[in-house]
Image (tube, helix red, strand yellow):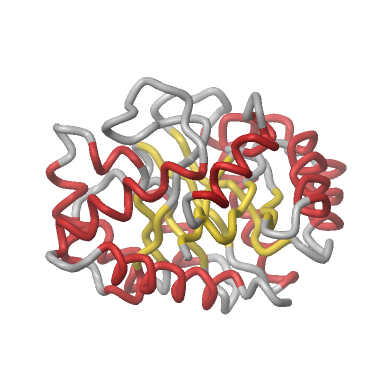
Length: 253
């Protein structure tokens, strides 16, 4: 069984078809990720409809300007739903700056607090903001469940810093791209018990499907790439990453 730990199921054009194809390709569980309050509501609804889908609720840093007290209070309420296994995605994105830095920092800190109170892991997005994000993780009271740096695009040294803070590292289809040598090096070197895989559907389809709409079934290509990078069988990566996901997200809450 493979587990896709990060998919925006509410953004897929053919959700029933994508879930059927995921099952046909051995994807046993999927975590549906939220990007704002509306998608958090939708993601929880999807998780309640499909037995193998679980949810993460939160506000993406791009939408941090919307994360006022009312929105955050509802996110915290949604975090108590039965099939919610994480808070996110949240974090910092200084590349596009669709929300101001201070709004992102405030929202991120608030999400860490929600995760701590709910005893849930936090799903983190970071781009061009590692140092600020690391400083926040060092000062905020993070849940004992820690969390995951999703769609990792840094080098091994950065990955090691997050691992030392208790976090998991998740690799997406970006790791299959030709110019992703640093990412593959990190995937090769990090401890096996900190490794996760994802699609980030419908974005970032892996080679050989790059440029197409991504979906959970394609997480197998990420697993195969990492298996080759680490010099092990795809079955070993399947077992390793599924065990890690089960440990972090505690699907049977």
